[in-house]
Image (cartoon, rainbow, N blue to C red; front, side, top):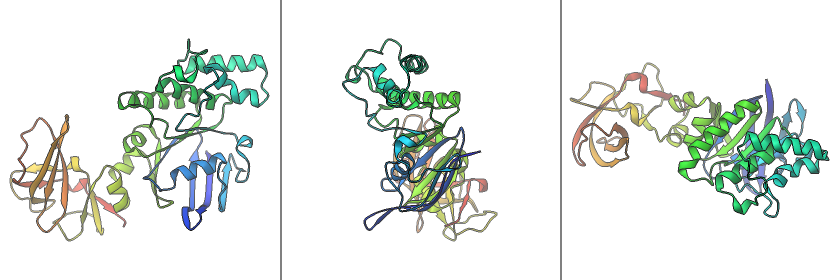
Length: 332
């Protein structure tokens, strides 16, 4: 069932078009990620859904009702900002209760709801602290509790893990996904982190120049990118132009995406789906090694090899091969 629908949404800032006739449907109970580089339009899209920006054209619907021109307080939508935007002079409990009190919720009902969220998000014992007395992860949970206080069916998350260090980010992301599953609400997350989007979301939309380049479940998006730009952006796939290498792909396409981890070393030059190349660089990365291999008269290939195997040296001539099934045809 569709919860949120955007139809032909366009937003301009002067001569620049941030969103270009963008249409998208997000389902009830779905964890959805908006992924893209700087200037792709993902944050503008989130702000339009929240009501902080008005589109120049198009329509935004929530549960079938047109909310395009409604102000933020009139929408059944909550937003958690990247900076968390906690009130520094208020305690944890008062930060969580802020929206409930503004909505006129009674004291008893507010206290009960705050206690529920404190327990749900592991904030017990921190209720009287101010934001400056909390760690980054604790501040994030307080901001999330405040956003969830009024039980919105749709929660918007603007780079929710960006302020956390790498060690905390993965664990917090998994906790966020588990929380979304328990609540049954729809989460829409903006991120520039590919691994974050792929590991947390049910579906991912890749934005490019204010348009959706592709929307699909994470595995499909990674293994079958639709265009050259999506292939290069998501996981830095190799793009093989038809006619430049000997390929035995079953379907004719102008180009194919080939993931670095799907390439392996060969003992001799393959007749098809392989090539000879020269190693230009090699980087050990712990669990694997990244190898850059230049094909004479062809592309520079990124190859990911297991770190435990014997690796060629820079300058060495090598043979590379891959399975036909590893080639993903690109539409453009």
